Image 1 (cartoon, helix red, strand yellow):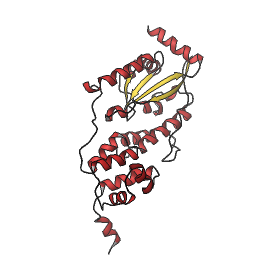
Image 2 (tube, helix red, strand yellow; image 1 turned 60 degrees about the vertical axis):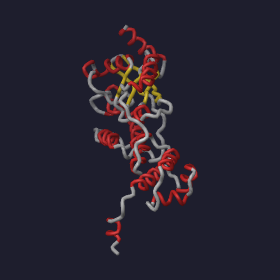
Image 3 (cartoon, rainbow, N blue to C red; image 1 turned 90 degrees about the horizontal axis):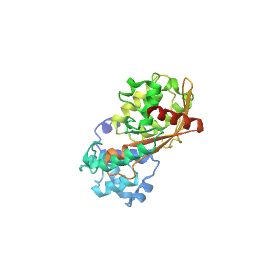
Image 4 (spheres, one colour; image 1 turned 180 degrees about the horizontal axis):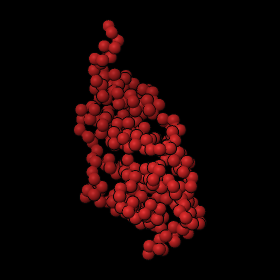
Length: 274
């Protein structure tokens, strides 16, 4: 029998293909994944090879053992013929009011230091007054009125790049983080599209991380415009263990001054806005 023909007519196995792909990216053997999920190796092998179907509960156990995002858990359930388990609401939905209040509090209490909220594609959803002040000083008021993307702002040649004194190091750190997040969500076409757009920007260095390796902490960002110099160190916060896709994918990026001079500069900018 022609091997190529047999491959061409191989029946689709969406659940098995997904599980095998996620398991491979996490460098897990069938035995390791089966143990973590609390099922037999034989059952997992049969599911991966389409010799058996998996129940909804088994798929959720495997998703938990693989530490899948809520978006990917929904995709696995749908591949198995089940309804999505986790909602994906707009941040303005009434059901997310408590989360919005918590985010607003984080942003306001971080003043006079910058903080932003980004979605899974690194689009800026919210920014506190300190972040808007800083971006306005660097990019101008008109630019701040248009949509902002955290990654693109630092990587594109006509955004913040001219004001970043240590741009090569910052670009390498951001790309490592972006690649890690994109590799962790191969089914997310929107995220993959944004990642490809970033990689097409001029002078972008190739990210140097292993597929399974997590990126290191973001390096210090040194910003300068004329006589004003500000160093920032960022920290990324997530919203606990939400049961909503939108909330799980939000990131609160909080920037602290790297030194006393940077703190004084941010305080001075806030005083001008008072």
